[in-house]
Image 1 (cartoon, rainbow, N blue to C red):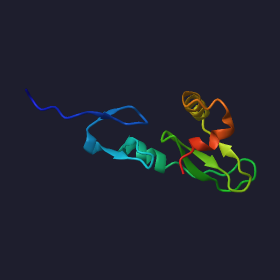
Image 2 (image 1 turned 135 degrees about the vertical axis):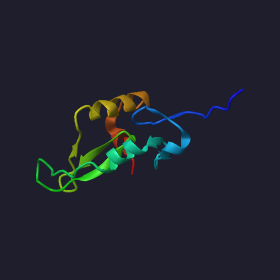
Image 3 (image 1 turned 60 degrees about the vertical axis):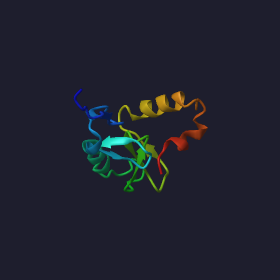
Image 4 (image 1 turned 90 degrees about the vertical axis):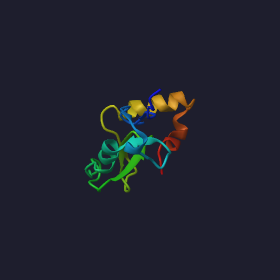
Length: 105
C-alpha cells in the first residue's frame, strides 16, 4: 500500500495543501502563504468620516477590517459583514452586543 501524505485545507480560501505548505494563525487556524500575504499586505486606508489613518484588524482569520482610532468607526469591504453575521449566527450569538468577541486581538 503506497504512503499518502495527509491533506489539509486553508481556513480562508479552502484550497488543499500539504502540512508543510501551511502556517498556523494566532487563532490556531491553518492558512496558506498566499492568504497570509493577502491579509498582511492590505493597503492602509483613511477614515471616510475624519480622514485619520485607520488601523487594520483581522476578523475570523478571513479578512481585515479598517478601524478608525479617532471616531471608532469600523469599515468593511463588500461581503465581509455577511461573513461576520454568519459566524455570529453559527456561534449562537444572535445578540450582536457580543460583536467584539468575533475580532481577533
